[in-house]
Structures are given as C-alpha cells and as structure tokens.
Length: 268
Ligand SMILES: [Zn+2]
Image (cartoon, rainbow, N blue to C red):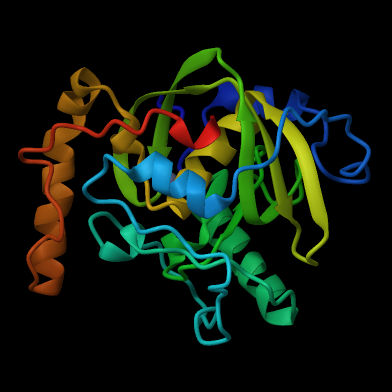
C-alpha cells in the first residue's frame, strides 16, 4: 500500500506516528534550536526557489497581507485538484489571528481526517494564504494537531531521503520524492505566537510537502524525470478531467514537461 502524505496513511506510517514524541504542544518554545544564520525572507527564498520554474507562483511581498476577503471560506471545504490554477497562485501572508482563522484551520482538519490525510495546505481548499495544518497520526483525537502560519525554512539537512508521497490534490497518484531529512523552521501558531522548531522524520516530510504548496510547488515538480514518467499518464488524465469539468483548457500540461530545477534552493 502506498504511503501517502496528504492521502492514505499506511500501517508503517501509523506505527511511526504513534512513536513520535510531541513536536509543539507544551514545549514549543523550549526546544533547543541554534540558529545557523539569518532567516531568509520568504519572498527572497521563493524567488530563488522558483526562478527556473515555468509554472510557479510569484513571490509574496512582505507587506502584502491577506485581507478578510482573502480569508473568507464556506464550509464544507472541498479539495482543489490538479491542474486547478488555485494550486499555482500566490499565497498571501496572514496577520489577522482571529476566530475566522481558527475556524478555517478547524475546517481544514475536518477535511484532512475525512480524506485520511496527514497534512493539508490552505490553497488546497481554495484559500490562497500561508497556512497549513497537519497531524502525523492522521486520526482525530490522536497524535498532535499542528497549525502553522507564515512558515519559513531557514536551514535544512544535507542528507536527503527518498519517500513515497501522495497528495489530496492528485487522487490515486503516488511516487517517490527526494527531500532533506530534517528542516529548521520558524512560523506562527493560530494565535500568532512565534514557533521555532527542528522537524525530522515524518513531520519533516509532511511539512516540506505542505510548505511547497504555499510556494505554488507541487510534488511532481520535485520528482526525477524517471519517476515523473511513471505518473505522467495519470497527470494527463487529471488534466483531461479538469477540461471536461470546467470546459476550460488545462492551464498547464505535463505532455512536454521536462521537470524543473528548484532543488531545495529555498533552504540555502
Ligand atoms: Zn499535497
């Protein structure tokens, strides 16, 4: 069975999740984390990371925060599927930490659990803001519910790991993706409080997948050409379904896609 990220959680991952210690609860401020250098602003990282991509979103400007209209949502939320352009749109930073934001995060957890996911980003439910939720246990009432707002990666491990990922926006598609083993991040929680933590193991994997969504990067952008070949037909099927559903031309196509070269450049 495939070990999906946004999607199904296999027994191996469940065992992994159950053995993980809490990441943020009760001690988020106390985790030792040495800063290796100044955090690179999100916009700068996005520019660097996406410079060679043809399909990625332009970077968010620091003063360009989400308005109340940007944060408006209507339950029940539905998962946006590839190749909807919402997944490539710019995601605005958040500076309003109110009941609406908490409600949005709660709704995202509901969608995530219902679809057997372990992580979900706001653009995947049609809200283009810098917000992600995840729970490596993948079950309501178990594990730890983590809400991250305006996340920034300021250091990532040199050691890379291969891991099979899935994505709620790509139903039925699973493939290997290479990512750094661990990342050091800064973010805010749902109340606006600052969080600084090192993530490794499954949480690091889920975080990086969702963080990419916030930069308009999708998991097949990270696949090697050999791996991409194994899912190209399935991606084309999703494009066809989109065209049938909307009556529009697919905004992007993998037909002649040669891959991109943003290889973890966000984390330098
Ligand atoms: Zn995803």
